[in-house]
Amino acid sequence: MNRLTLSLCIFLMAFFSVPVSAQKKKTASKIPVAVMINFPGGNDIKNIAADSRNVYVSLKWCKFLAVIDKATGAVSKIDSPKEITSVAVANGKCYYHIVSKGIFSYDPATKKSAGPLFGIESPDDSMYSPDMSVSPDGHYLLCDRYVIDLIVGAVVGEVFEGSSVKTVNKLGGVYVGNPEARYFPLGADGYLLTDKVVVHNIFADPVTGNAYFACEQGVGWTPEVPVADAGLKRIKELQEYQVDCVGRDDKDRFVFGLRNGMAIGGMTPEAPLKVYTPLKTGIIQYGMDLKLDHVDRVARDGQGNILAASMNILVIFNPEGVKGYSTIRGKAIQID
Image (cartoon, rainbow, N blue to C red):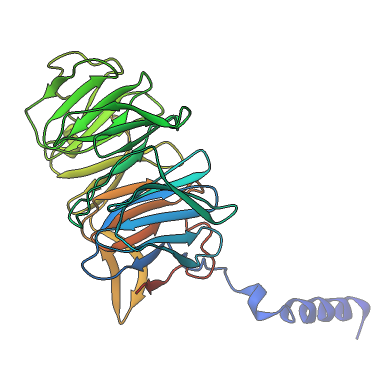
């Protein structure tokens, strides 16, 4: 065997000795896009809120507040002698409302609660289930018909009985829904914004300063300083859907909760709109692809995921793969 033949043999042996795995074309594994958490049946999700550590979920007629660790996905509870009706997060604290007790706060660093706060009376009625939210700048806490200044630590505004404060804009103006949309500058009389639609949800946008209305006709909005009889501007792409809620994700894209799923995108006809009807989770259980046919609550968790709820089910969704929640990622779990 001459030197050339020997060199060729060594080359061929080296080529064919490459491990099989290195010769194969790499295939991308399927990334789980969601987590599904099932809460007790009949206990619909009322509010979802997130701070730097946890996601908090309040449920109708439940005597606990669910606390989901964003890193691990571990679920714990804040127990209560009465129903916890709603929850919101502001300035590193979690605020929640207990029937007949009032508003309490929870500090995730110390894991201690305090309250009742702000001197707000709560009727001893399990059917009393007020919403709770926080203004985009974290200045105001909104519960039922009360506007609470968290810096001052006191009630600074109250709207007419039978209405419900939904959100506050950057100027301190209060938006009220159920079923009409009204606007109240703090300390002044309010006026009707629109009576043309039934308003499901009002969202104060921290990016534009506008207030956005989710309604059966799609989505409408008012300028930062509303004018009487402003009516609604509508988005053609969403008119074919019944929009139940609107929010933002961590990339500042709009998120629309629909009667038949969810949509992510922009507010103008030129902006791309990704529609998920239904919202598939990518989770297979008992041979079924788990999904949400209806989304009536949306929120962002601060680490790139969208929190979407329907009835007693919470889905943590991310088209690029869920971030965090390491022990429950790609799974459906039951909370009793």
